Image 1 (tube, rainbow, N blue to C red):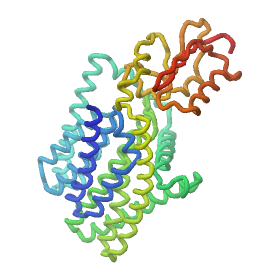
Image 2: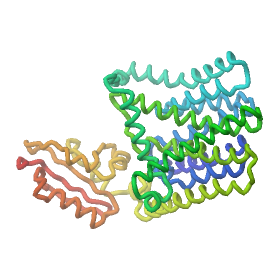
Image 3: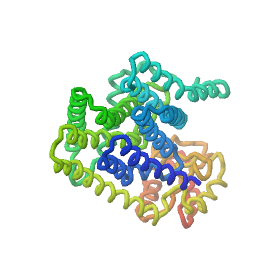
Image 4: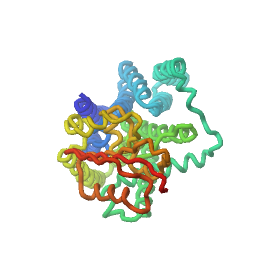
Length: 428
């Protein structure tokens, strides 16, 4: 069921980007570009290959952006309420979905063709309508479990620190998305230069587009520009939410998974600016070869990574929704383990999904406090595929003289993994 839902959401996202993008911009090159990048992106493959919230969240975020733009373009109440619906459920899926609400408010307030007073009313109606379900959810949580009270804000942290931490984390993720990043950008300085140069060039191109539209007041050209700007609003809103979340007692993990929804919005900014600057200034059509060449470079690089990941997961059944996981003897053994056992795994998410038990990452064993009463076993599960390299690392870790905190109690081998059981000792 999860697999088919992911396929449906992935296909729907590609359709919205290509068909919806074309309906808004009337540019086949642009709409096909963003659809193709989404299709071949390894980050999207990872997102849509599991039982996580990203597939639904990304689909709803893309749908919200498309519906907002179509509501302005077509002056359609139906698309307006579809935008409200998608923003509302994106926020319920992940709290950071409030980025869609803020984006919608700014978008409708700035670009609705009406008086400023009516613009504010429309934008306010959108925001309130989209936020009602989240408000109800907060009231329910606080009334039934007190979960809201478990979170607090640490105002002792500085805003500059919050911004810097998130900027560095985002930069590290963006470096992973560079095409041919290992061979073309071997040093960190080259990655940094490319990332910030790209943003600077995109900002200048976008500024030229805004000035050109402001002078010409071309309504047909306004629609592509509004789509590009709304993608920019979303990126800023999303990043701002993460900066604010830094002050929470439970801040989010700043990793590729957290930033991955931004990928397609960033490419809408980049390719939208390139294609429509060429069109706005009526430059020779041959100059379109520049964004097309960039598209080919990114697509080839991404496809090589995506193809490798897909083949590996087909061959080794990495996917958490695959039959290998569902029919795993290793999972059955873990289900039957003592609830007093502390679990560690190289695939904690997969084990959580199929057993309902939450294991820690293997790396966390380095910080384990020794239980000198020797009453609790530490269990580590290594899931398929089993390689000599993986087993050597694990055996060396627990047999080295440098780490004598654990005594091997049992070692059970299965066709799809190994379970090691260790007990703490008093030698450390």
